[in-house]
Amino acid sequence: MTDSAMHKSEGKQRVQIVPLEVLFGVADVMDNVIKAGKYPEDDWRKGMSYKEILGSILRHLIKWSSPFHSDFDDDDGGTGLNHLDHALTCLMYLRWYTIYKPDFDDRYKGETKKRSTYTCPKCGMGADPTVGCLRCGYINGIRIKDNG
Image (tube, rainbow, N blue to C red; front, side, top):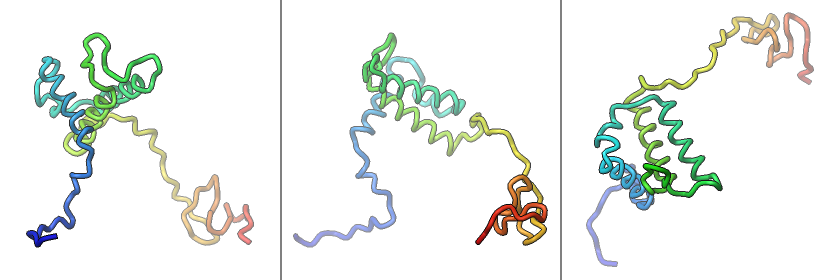
């Protein structure tokens, strides 16, 4: 091999390893919905409910995986493009929202449980009074497990 110019790529993202077919599929979906007049070009950047976009992702994945649907979005008003490309496009939007639109995060956060301030009287480690101390095996001064 002949001498070639030096090029420092260390520490840079290796975008060349991302499959272009997948990127083109996402671009096709975005281009199709814009050309069809379904959405303005940058409308997705306004953000939307995380649960709403997750619903769209799941619907496309379910349709793709169902034996009763085609791999392609060919329902009434559909794009005719692959459901996986639609799901990836929506997933890309959702990932972007997690970076730039955190206020749209409406996922269920669960019930908040107060943390116990119970301290094991034997070893002083924080413990759950209903379970006992995981370090020494005592709860309220009673040995509840054998630590060997």
